[in-house]
Image 1 (cartoon, rainbow, N blue to C red):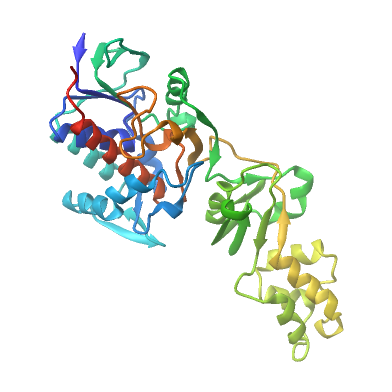
Image 2: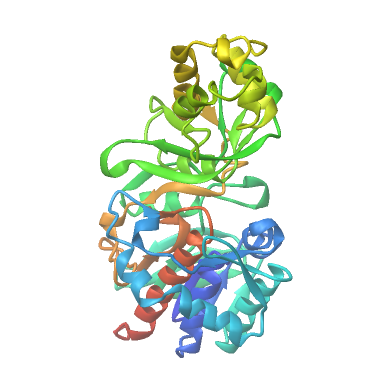
Length: 406
């Protein structure tokens, strides 16, 4: 039997950060992870350069059944706080797009930084190590059956992440544990994920695979409506790219259509009619001057308009219909690419069973949930890492200031 002040289960972004900060506050911390390779999700993120935060991260960039839950943690540990840590470790970084920060070199630098923080806190790391059972003891605290032996601690932190990318060790262990301790779990589903369409629906667009363009995409209704100006990518099975990954998180139901404006900077219904006064080009060439050529051709076929017809011979009504169809493409996905392609999980341990200040369970004293396993999901672009850092920091502070067990 070995005793610790706290056991953190899961050595991803949130778990590593929480363990290091708690250890540096004087706690004896054990960090456990089942995977043979540590922090693989950090390693593969951002194309191998780790989009480790976003300068603009705030509550409005996160989805949850309780959108206000993330406010406390995000306010107390900000992107600027993490940036200072990165700078303190001498890691060079750059801003790529809309506040997204990436390592100049490699995501391995972030992993090594977090390991150094754990080392500075005297954290004990067992990896690979599995946890077969967690039991709440009658007098308080927990007993854990692990492949490294029996462990006791007054506090346990669940930082086991979500279900995306099972090939690198994603697991539902944390969700199962939460349910066993009678916590509500918001149904998990893939988020930040490419969307797919049935073969017949997608047949007219399959030849556009590889084509990318900036669009405006929207989905949902009322406060649950999302809207993004980002790049869209056509694939053989459907749609991807930042615009689609972002909006995928807002599809609360499979019967919600996407609304896509394929030319958000233009007013095609007006411009095509006005062009008749000066242009002698064929309709296909006129449209291709404003849209990618392959898309223009596919769109004329979709709207059953003759690409070879000279623009002056086209009816105003047809040109207006063509323009409106480009600006208001409504389509219904049949599904998505699932956990293997999803970047994060929507849903998780319900926030109604957790303290927003400490991430501690309201049902079981001393049990905490942090990071992706919680029902807080960020936008694409470093936001989910910021939630990992912020929730971990809030939890570590709570661990360090908790009353000593009797």
